[in-house]
Length: 196
Image (cartoon, rainbow, N blue to C red; front, side, top):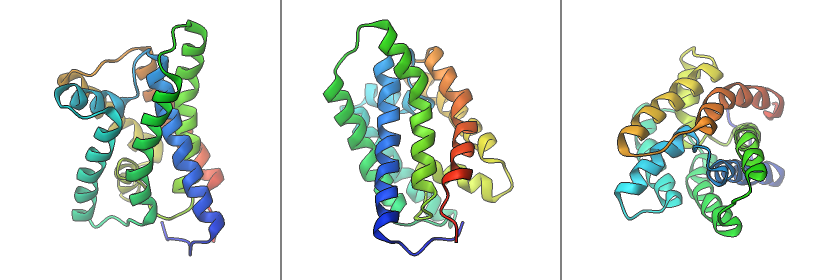
């Protein structure tokens, strides 16, 4: 995916997309019907270390960045911004909303969480400023001939299994995220990618 020469509008799209992405992840956590697949993994690590979920997201992102560097995958300012912004937005959103006890807003948060993540992905990956570490894995598969939705589902499924082993929790929200996020990312990315 060739990179676009950045403008102020492109940077604004990047930040907006990352904020939506982090907000979507936090919605799934707030829904408490099972976190997203990557969050199952992050939660498992968080429960075995003194790190918060947001800090764990940043830490894991840095490790994946090293892996993508070894694979010689294209990276850019969007890659670094992803590592720095999403975890902070997750922690900020969770601190602002606190715990939600009413079941109706919990269901709504769980249903719309992956949609916000996918919409955010479309905005920020579509800037062509470089995918974040986790999305970089997805685009690495895509560059090797695997459809975006298949790559995303495979990666997220692997995270669920590993996260469960580490002590993360799952529920119907995890399954919903796993099944909906890949096709949704592909849908939004096709419509929001910045054209040459």
